[in-house]
Structure formats: structure tokens, C-alpha cells
Length: 511
Image (cartoon, rainbow, N blue to C red; front, side, top):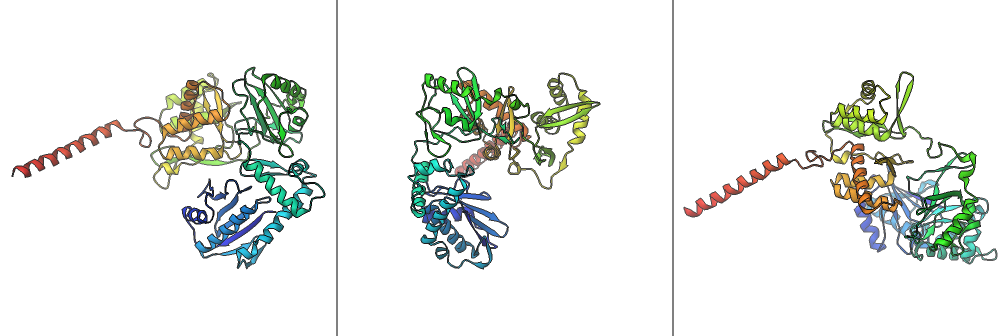
């Protein structure tokens, strides 16, 4: 099972120091999220699951997860040892807050590590007979079960210690020896489906087209599976369990649920699609629920900075709409319009454009002036305690559902994790990088646009995100733009200074 060690200390070590220290012991170690609240450590080719390091108020927490490799355990104990050295702290086991760990290498000796690997196998073998046990590894999910053990060369007669070694070897092979890691894992913007218990579940997406039949390396497990023919604009959604009845013969399971997949010919795909249509759950009236793409959301109030005049507005970004009532009529204002109204009313001071936006959005049905009055009373600016800076920008994406941006009626949802990349580009004032980011995001998530259309959508999405963050792309914007007037003044000041220096030099030489 997972093991956690807490290091109690008053000292905080810089992420760079931690990286440098552990890299000395484990050359080639990867720390993709170094410096965040929780960082993950793994070595390509040697790790199955990443070791987690979390900064806590009273020190650090180091955790290793079930079915980690032997080498992950070496990283685990070395990381604890290095942190104890860097912080002068003391280490405690998760289930023993009173007795410090005096010798990390004795507490997690090679023999104890081997025993933990054996226990991991024994416990999961029992659990996987009743439930679908999934472990989240460095490169791929793994669905545990009899099929996986069979592929690893394990049967009921295999001793547990030998089985644990075979399982570790096989899991390492699955993580690192496959040709690639492009899967059918769904992007955050893809709609979810409601299962028989009423829970919203993700859908694994297999997208096929004649010009790119080799799009995926493997089939990623989710409760539902979607097959979409991009050329004929035809698709089905089935329970993932049904996939095992119709999977192409060239695909092979690498665990209990997931397949290494090879490209299909058009004839093979058509046969696959025809079989899948027999199990299409969208033909079931019980599943034709208009609300299946939406999740119930908990309130989640965020603050966004809206002005250079040290003000901000509180906005609930967890819900998809802002409700505005006029008389007996309730208007659902989409979130992207709400943000644009904030942008126009508070940053641009442009009430006319805000009125036109509402007018066009609701086809003249609402009393726009009354709507703006209600909006401004509801979205009251508050003073900031310190001057606004780009580094103060906060993520707006809801952790569960992401942030929906709009480009010519096309909704694109950015996940909360990916928004951090956008914030870094904003803070670096990298507008070109922002457009490139959106182009790559659209391509990676299966949007099939031509190159020029893709670029246009990327620009639209960049502008939309600027508006969401209440920033501006104007050249006179104090954060992102280039102020021509100030630029000209600076240029002539520099020229005057240079001319003065030259004149003084000539006078001195003449004398």
C-alpha cells in the first residue's frame, strides 16, 4: 500500500536545491512540476509511479504509492534523506507521530522494499477480483486483474514474491517499452455521459479519418467509449465493457481493459463501426437527457483583477451561467458574456458596447438598460490592498469542468491544469506564444481545421482569454501593449543625450 513520511521542520528549501540534491543521486530524474505545492519525481525507464513531495505548513510530506517500482522506493528513501539533511528536520511515519525515524535506509531496507512489493501484489490480486482497480502510472493508467497477471506470466501457482517481481517487470515494460503514448483519453472539453447510477462519467474517444488512421498508440479506459468517423461525420457511444465484444483482431490487451491498437483500413473501421452501432447507448431513450453534458457544481467564488486602478470584481466561475431576472423572465447569461461585460464596463468604461453585446445576445428580448443596472449593482468593484501586477493574475478555470472560451460560436474548454501554462505566457507578456499554445491545443484535441482557420481560431481564443482575465491587447495597454507616444519620447530623449555627449567630447578634443 502507499507509505507516507512526514518531515517536521521550520525550514523551507528552495525547489532548485531539492532538484539539485536528488539529481546528484539519480541522474536523469524528471520533476515536471518542480516548485508546485506537490511535486512528482520519477526516472524514465525505471519508475512505474512517481514519488510525491508536498509542502505542508509544518514541513514536508513524502509519499510513495502502491505498485511503485523498486527504483521508486530508492528515490523515496533518498528524497527523505536529502530533505532531512537540508532542513535539519525529523521524519515520522504516517501511523506513528511519536517515534521519529532515525535511519531511513534501515526503515526502508531492500528486504522491506521487497516485502512491500509482495504485499502490493497480494492485496491488489484480491481486490481486483471484485472491483476494477486502476493505478495511475507515469505514462499510462493500468487496469489490474487476471488478464494483466496472465500477460505478466503469473498464475495461481506462482509464489507471491516471484509474482511481485514478474509484475514489476511487466508494469515497467508497459510504461516504457511501448512505441508511443498517444491515447484515446478524452480532452477536458468533451461531454460526459451519465451512467446507470446517475453519475457523470468520461468518454474515451476513438477518432478515425482516412488521412490519419494511425492516430493512437493505445485505447485508454473510461466507463464509456466513443467511435467517431471524421470523414462521414458519424459516431456512436457504447459502454466500454461492450468494446471487448467488438475490438478489432489486430488490437491486443495489455491489461484488464486497455488495448495496444494498430491502424485500421477503411474496410476494417467500417466493420468496427457497424458492430458498435448495435450497442449505441444514445439510441436508448433513458440516456437522451439534455443535461448529460453538465455536472452539478459546488459554489466556487474566484476573484479576477479588472482594472489598473487597483480594483477587482468577485465572480462565481464554477457555474456555466449568471442569472438575471427581469419581471417574470429569467435570463441565463453565459459565463463568457459575463466576463466580456466586466471587461467592457470596468476596464474599457464602454457602456454602449456592453449594451450592444446584451442586445445582440438576447435578440432585443431584455430591457438592456435595466440589465446593465442590475449587473453593475451585482458586480461591485472592490479596492485592492496593493497595486495590480501581472503576477497577481489568478486561474479562472473550475478545477472539475475547466474554463469555456468561445471562437465564432465554437466552444473550447481549457482544463484547470492547462490554464497554468496560459498564465505563465500572460505573465511573460508572450502574446505570440499564447496564439501558438491555442493552435497546438486545438490540434491535440482533434479539431479538424485548415491551417489558416486554425490560426484564426487561436487568435480568437487568445483574445477571449484576455477578456476573461480583463486584460487588453491594445498597443497602449500598460501591461501588454507598446505605448507609441512614450516610445517616441524615450527615443528623442536618448538621441538628445547621445548628441550632448558627442558635443562635449568634441569640445574637449578641440580645447
